[in-house]
Length: 88
Image (cartoon, rainbow, N blue to C red; front, top):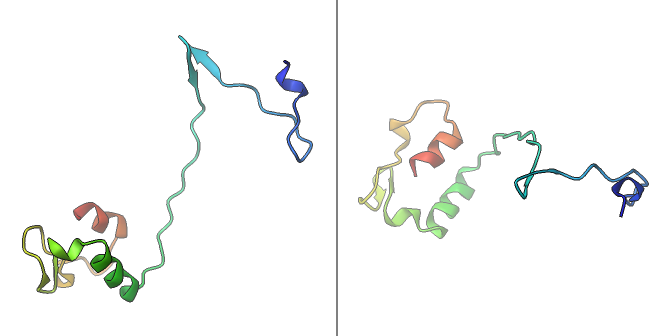
């Protein structure tokens, strides 16, 4: 089977097969773009409760005490949501 003869639905030729090194495929890295999600405090509160985070973490004094509190007054004014998720 020749890969160059294969066509995609849009008529474009199939890409070259991945090279192999000692029997395992070597893939080219892809570009990954992280975007900041839209923040919504009501949705966040709902998820915090539904996912059980409130069992161990507290927010502004409400919730568990087994893990680090996630109080707003201890955070930077401009919060990076990825750093926040890493704390949890």
